[in-house]
Length: 96
Image (cartoon, rainbow, N blue to C red; front, side):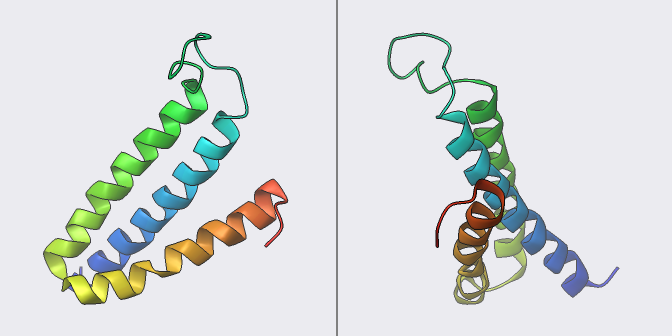
């Protein structure tokens, strides 16, 4: 496989994990946590999966950084902010 194709896969995977992580954290904090003591009030299955999703996003991002310059990676990853806003609009019915 081409190096550019692999790098593109890592970019898409990192962005997808970031979007998913944000959605899981947002929906997770709106549900009861494990206990009534902070920070356990925030911890439930969704928030844990959101944190795991961010961990995968970080791993994929590190693979992108291994293959590209930081200034290029940051320029590309600026798109993830737009993707999170669009996902919140489409999935969570939040206003833009």
